[in-house]
Length: 407
Image (cartoon, rainbow, N blue to C red; front, top):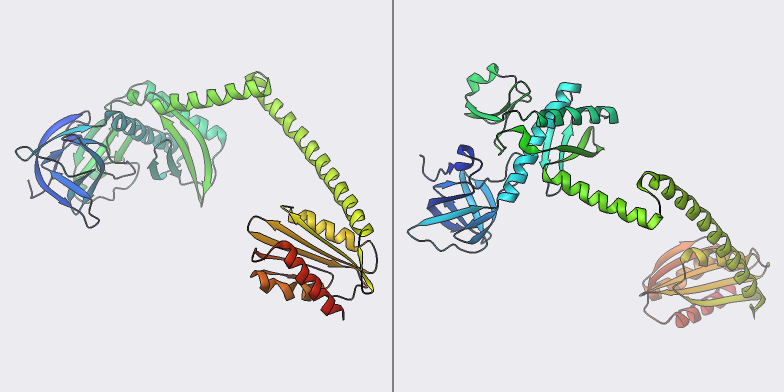
């Protein structure tokens, strides 16, 4: 054995849950994280799309496992106390077996897509809740996904053996591999006889039946490829439970049986669209009435009529509509509206054709006072900035500027 080369117990027996080992090295990395390098380990390090194992060493939590410069580092929560330079390791078996189920499921699903449609898998990710594969195709029909899923579950149901074998590069031509092997030197094959031959360094169960079941959840376009999301084993039951809870909740809310949920939801959405249109029409009418009221209460301003109003938390779209409607109420109207919303001030100004005040110039006269930005045209302008002064004071500055511009 080379110096610091750890024996990988997860290759000898992937079902090993506890082990004892001497310690090669205990140190900290450049970020101050404590780690241990062991003579032998059952902890799988992150690699090949599969996350690392977790567990404990002498009761101390193992939070990460990585292969760095040829050594397998077990990053622990704190430094580990050693007895006779030895560690007792315990694997989080639930996490390990879940990873084994997902990984063999990926092999089976990838082989199913390739055998059925010649769609190659170019990448794999084993996520905390969902796994994904990227297929080398620009589109995927639902019938194709269902056929691949059915084939994958048949392979699982047949409970075929999953074998591993170490070979040399010279022996590669003797095997019909699903994809090229990128690792030099000795190569580890994971084999499902008469179905899939694949170079892989991950952990897998020793039979396909231990994947229990496989379910494709959805797929989407990812650049020029198709990303397929799926789950295996216990995750299938977890997904089923989650979706059943959601469906049960909807049946209660919509007061409809499961088979009628789609039509019930569609009916509600259509009703909501009608309600939203009615609400929009009513809001428009209210703004129109409000504009008429503002015009009635406009005050004389030199040869013009001035409408000025301060609002709190109004929608800017309401103010825009209100200013335009009010300014259309005569040939001599100037409208200045200020809105206070949170820590911001907003300004909307509008003028009728013969008002004689350029609204763009007006608003740009005062925006520096509130560190604001904005602009517009001669007949309409808007902007906003910080609440550096009360809204009423900003209104006074706007009126002063309007008076100066009119003169």
